[in-house]
Length: 299
Image 1 (cartoon, rainbow, N blue to C red):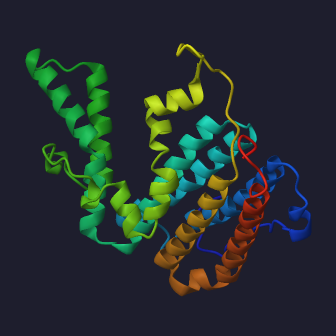
Image 2 (image 1 turned 90 degrees about the vertical axis):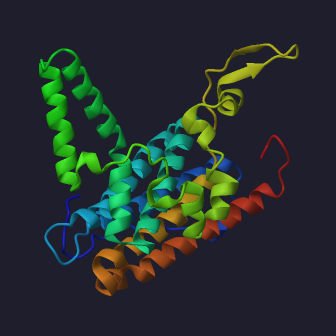
């Protein structure tokens, strides 16, 4: 799909039959339907990410938001790929990254200003500033001789800063604060996702960073004597993250369409997005009803 100022593309609607869903006897039946609904969500995310608004291009500040929508579209696609391959570990990592991207989109829009976008951009260029300083120090140490690889790296770094619209010298390496002055948990709380971060997505940081909890839960087995052996089996994905990400992604779609195109962009899709949200909720509730009759380890 390419960027467009034209009419939003038609998205195929996934049918949800409450009678058929109530008759599901396996959780994987819910997973199949949840994945299909997430594909529909991802189509709306992709369509929104290709919306330019009234101008033929985004400004840099708009691109900070729009680029995150493109990123979300790709993350959800990759997430679905891992889900259908029944790989819980890697799908969890991608779902955590998608959640953070959704929070970033909503926070940037809710507090949109040149100062906030500058903070977002400068925060991301700290690595480039450190790398440039290191290269320049190495060049000075060898008496001014510049290696070919250093020339290429310096040109690449300069291009990144130029396109970002900031000078690398304005990136303060002593400033350790997160962009916007809030960490992810605080940003999630500010956009109404604080409980979701605490209950679901905050714990997924274990999976992203490979903490002991991630190793113990997914990559090791423990015997009765307390010894460890490798566990190379993949965990089984569950439907709940699909339902949650589906709802949160729809919030991001609505926010972005109103941000970039106003009511003109949002009005034709309001009913469709609401209907999709209702279908996700109905399947989520049916899944909870299904689980209510189960006991561990069946749940």
